[in-house]
Amino acid sequence: MGQFHVQLDLALGRMFEVYNALNKKPKEYAPGMPLYLAEIHMIEAIGRYPDSKLTDISHILNVTKGTASKMIAKLTQKNLVSRYQLEDNKKEVYVRLTESGRRAFEGHDKHHESRSADIDREFDSYSAEEQALILHFVQKYTEEMSRYLE
Image 1 (cartoon, rainbow, N blue to C red):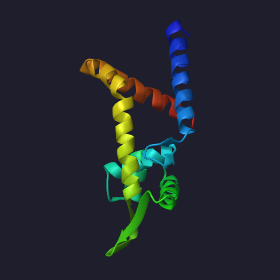
Image 2: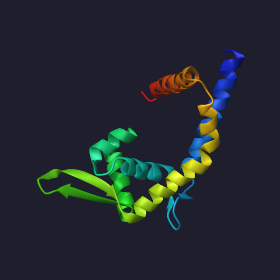
Image 3: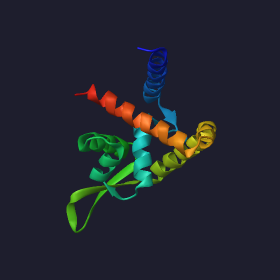
Image 4: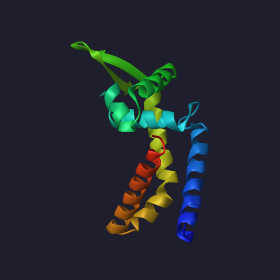
């Protein structure tokens, strides 16, 4: 394995360690509402795709319907999400943010605006070809890592 591959593996390993640490530490996106990364990402998906079906949200987040259902139940208990069904379709479950959920969603957006500004400027300085290369690499690396799950 060449030096580049070793450095790349170390850098990506560190990135995953940081990401995993973030997943274990709740953050308040609105006062008095500590949320884990998975929870705020569920809130973000529901906020960006309001009145979506549970199935739609599971596809958006690339999780099973069971995982999405459990997370939505947890967020419902925290009064951040509400579930409902249409009068003419009792089969499908739809979800939307409550007022508290909307505050968490907006707080998350503000957090991204302040925290992501530097990296966004960095990526914006890259050419379209460089951006495409980075995205292609991340997608290919994710595919390769997914093979280890089989």
